[in-house]
Image 1 (cartoon, rainbow, N blue to C red):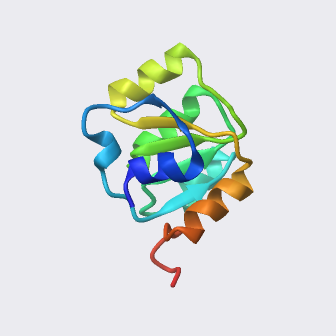
Image 2: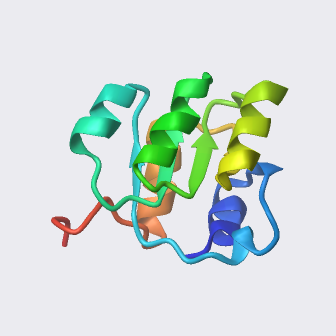
Length: 118
């Protein structure tokens, strides 16, 4: 699945995506509002779905090699966060769905949670 596919499935708005980023393939995702859980438990996920809108989300994504953040519930980061994501090359999307629904839609379309999942 590509980031463009995620955008289409979630009917999301692109807040920032560098050239060619939307065509990048992703195979796993996670959903969390607790960045400590992302740091402790997330392995090999390329997409983070969250309702948390602060710079720590971008920094956590960078440390975990996450290439796309989807803000759920219509949340939108401020310009400083968008600039930070741009500097780090992390795509930002925003969708209106709640996290449970957004994760379910992506799962239904083939995106999984990690290598332990079958």
